[in-house]
Length: 226
Image (cartoon, rainbow, N blue to C red; front, side, top):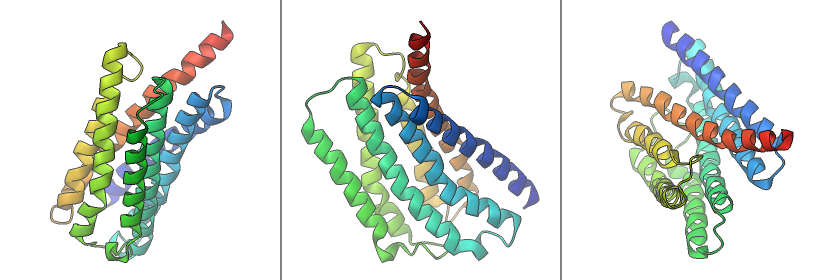
């Protein structure tokens, strides 16, 4: 367990520091509402994941994951909520960046999926406080989340191709990779714990998303100097 504890703790600290520092910098120093939205999204990503990753690091260095099931479950629950808000903010970033004025039905769908996802997460059948949670509800609560991801992939791909945009041209790939690495963990980690290692490349996909958002911040600061 020691090599795993060292490797995971090092990776998690670097990731959380990056997400929080980058997010807060954009949120506090950003001038435009768009940059501030990207900062809020990145800071929320880091803060939300901290609720799960910090207890996990603690568990790895002390009595183990199963002995800290309640703390890990609460952290996982909080992260599930914050990631839902993360994609909702990313949707509004898409609307503002590409100046989308209509498609209000799509806005309603995204909000509806977000509310449904949160409602499913709140159900006691999730059994957040136990170590091995029911697979059925792990799948159910991730259905609306996956649909949100598919919508984000589709709309960013459509607009970036239409406008020949270079800032978010890889956003569809980054989001697709994050879900591609995450869903096998939901489905199979209970049977094959080694699959949990896919959470590392999933996390790196989110780092890529933040790095793309940072281009807007850097562009803003560069234009201010000029």
